[in-house]
Length: 97
Figure 1 (cartoon, rainbow, N blue to C red):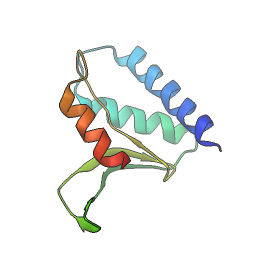
Figure 2: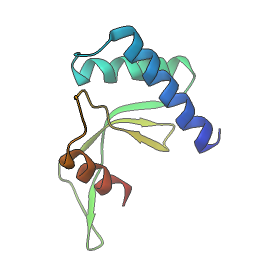
Figure 3: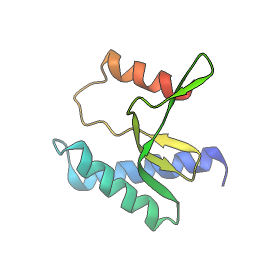
């Protein structure tokens, strides 16, 4: 499956979960339901995957956990907020580096 097909499947599953549960639910509930939806599609999903931070070439275990790792290719960070805050953008830049 191409990365585009994979991300399309993830986004579609996330939309289904949100339409079913609606707004105002805890992130953990969205994460568990999204993992279930993705597994129904036959995708490998790891929840709460530890991700080290690499600083000056050294792996540092900083306690960051990705909400979902899908097909060992895409990290999904679930958010249940009215809007994305700067700290959320900083977190995503750490894992994409």
